[in-house]
Amino acid sequence: MLNQVVFVGRLVRYEEPNSVVVKLTSSTTYEEWYITVKLPNTILTNTKAYCTIGDLIGVKGHLEQGNDIIAEKITFLSAAQRGGEEDDSNTVQESTETESQS
Image 1: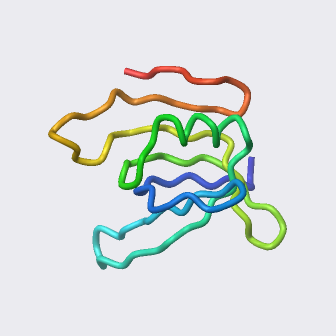
Image 2 (image 1 turned 180 degrees about the vertical axis):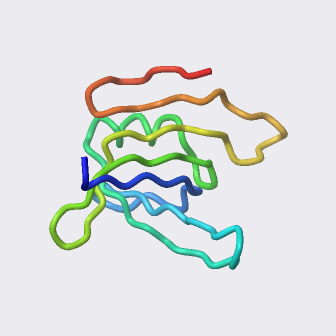
Image 3 (image 1 turned 45 degrees about the vertical axis):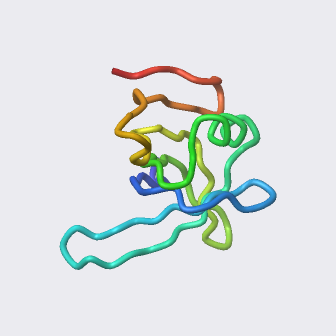
């Protein structure tokens, strides 16, 4: 597929009605970018249930008209530092509810 976007970043905030903002940081130039990603309802519901602000997530999606990024899959990579605990990686796809990865 030619129209594909894949990146990893930290969840910054939830926006209404169905979007999240993800912060990307360059490891070489230390620049930051804030990307707004639109989520289908099934992915949005699970992301709100399992992710909080600051969590590291992976996003796979595609571009639509107007440079909107539409998520097809969100991977929960790690939780933000909350008492030293980290969650196991979980994946949410549009077609499935939640599936675990090792």
